[in-house]
View 1 (cartoon, helix red, strand yellow):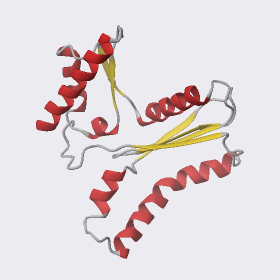
View 2 (cartoon, one colour; view 1 turned 180 degrees about the vertical axis):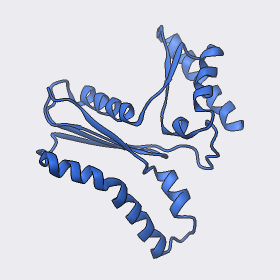
View 3 (cartoon, one colour; view 1 turned 45 degrees about the horizontal axis):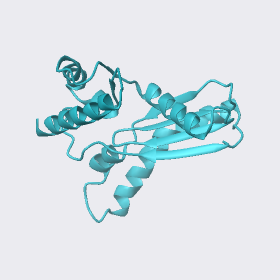
View 4 (cartoon, one colour; view 1 turned 135 degrees about the vertical axis):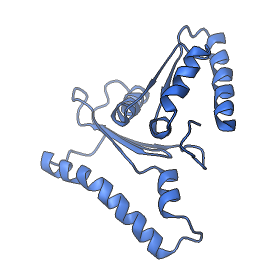
Length: 178
């Protein structure tokens, strides 16, 4: 409840700043933390019903990855050819790429967030080698389908632009929206 109140207060403040800058319509989007939360959809609905935003929706992991590559495309130039984006969050990692400026975006979301993996596999500090081995095995297992599909499709040429980014959900995630 305290984290939800802090999040709503932050959204209220940012919404006020955006509207003061002339933004007419605000839409909140939820990502992995809200996809996993028991009340994620309800949290977004409350933002709308309380008038903090005009609309809200919960993104799929693939949509999240596609938006990351679109943001990269806009920042490096509309005509950038091959792009790749890796966005490591707290609950998931999104990977998106396109081979040419006119090619469709390929995207996927993997359950490899920094907080998720730390909480599930690295409970002790310093981290014992056995725990690191479990972490490496989990990452290999989750990324193997990506590697296999790349080999089947033919390994694409190197990207002209590769962007990496990261953020994370609030530590202590308890299954409720934060």
